[in-house]
Length: 268
Image 1: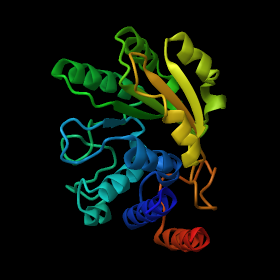
Image 2 (image 1 turned 180 degrees about the horizontal axis):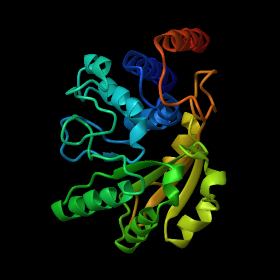
Image 3 (image 1 turned 30 degrees about the vertical axis):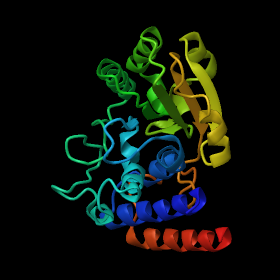
């Protein structure tokens, strides 16, 4: 399967998951989905049984439906587990749980803390002689957190070149547009001043991502990829609607799947 076909299949699974649960941050999941597909299918060494594989910390924990669907596609657990998303005692909960879910490398979801966790994993890898990189995916609202910038300072100071931070820059957070709550630009200049390697891409264009990630994870300089994205990408009535994120009814799920089926016919 090519990346477009994989992304379409994973999108459908996200819609089925959230529609079945009637809860879940579907628009945020669809925002980050293409990034995760690219990372797990092309960029990361992500063999479920590999001890030296690359790791990923999902700071944007509310986007976990996309992570779960990608992990299932990669064989970390059975796809049938997706249909019990958010159920009491289920394998897949509303935030990534590293103690519960295969393939989830760290429990995450508290804004601003994920990069510190990624730094710790990278330093542990260095001590153990492991060569795997550590990817950390965050939302742009997390860039308002002081803890994240403290961690960014540490990444550079400790020469953690294996750390790759990915910013899912969809421009929104729970309280509204990021630019209205607390503007975070100019991001590139800020990370450069902290000693990071900076690149930008379209977070829904696989060729753009390939170019942006081509120099990441080499040497002793940490890298950040700022990926421009759109909330609800792929479903017309969820794209860029701030209020359309907390749930999806079964009727909406059926309508979304119809749209995605039509998209599949066009891609084919």
